[in-house]
Image 1: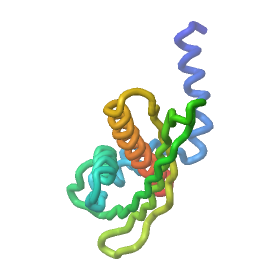
Image 2: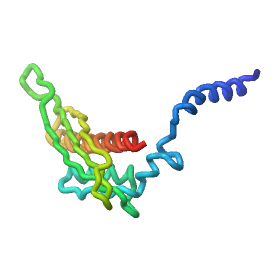
Image 3: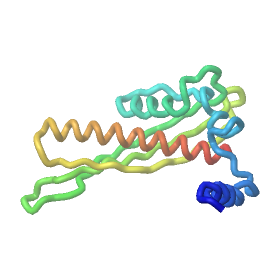
Image 4: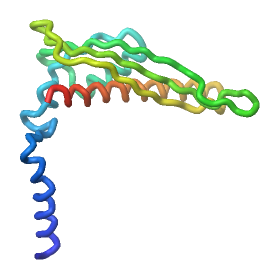
Length: 160
């Protein structure tokens, strides 16, 4: 058997266990990803963090054309110092985020899915004041993206 033929056989053998378990790719024609795409209306943002969070959700779900679902959320962000140098200066900070979310059907107001997502990010506090502020803003934007992506991943799994 030549090398390209072996690869085909190995690929088929690798996919064989998935065929029997009902595995469907999320973005397949009848997958969960397409079930939610352009169909989720997201609660309006109220703060800078909310705006970054909602923007990432809309990037993943798309702007709703005919919204069937409503996604409500609340964000709780905590900032804590993470390290102290020998001269008692803070060397880095950590942002911890908690996102609580609920997906409901708009027509019936029935809760379809929901939960709590926790994650964190950090940044270095060494350098100038301007660099520290920029690093904190970047860390906050990263955290909102992480939380939004975690919610989308969880919803795809729950609704499959």
